[in-house]
Length: 70
Picture 1: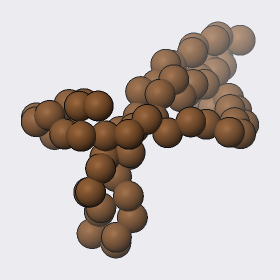
Picture 2: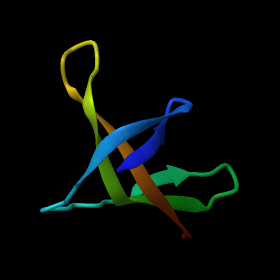
Picture 3: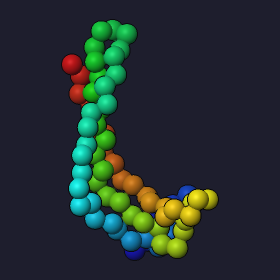
């Protein structure tokens, strides 16, 4: 399938998640509240035939950010 990557269309393969451990990031705000954020990965694509400078595969991620305030 083709996906947008760095301003162009590239071939990519969807990769299935087999295990997930999504935790909350916690931020203390100056107004005394605590902001909790969780990034949920919704889709992962491995860009076909492309590696980074270390030779690792390149992945394109789609995420959803879940905020919560305490």
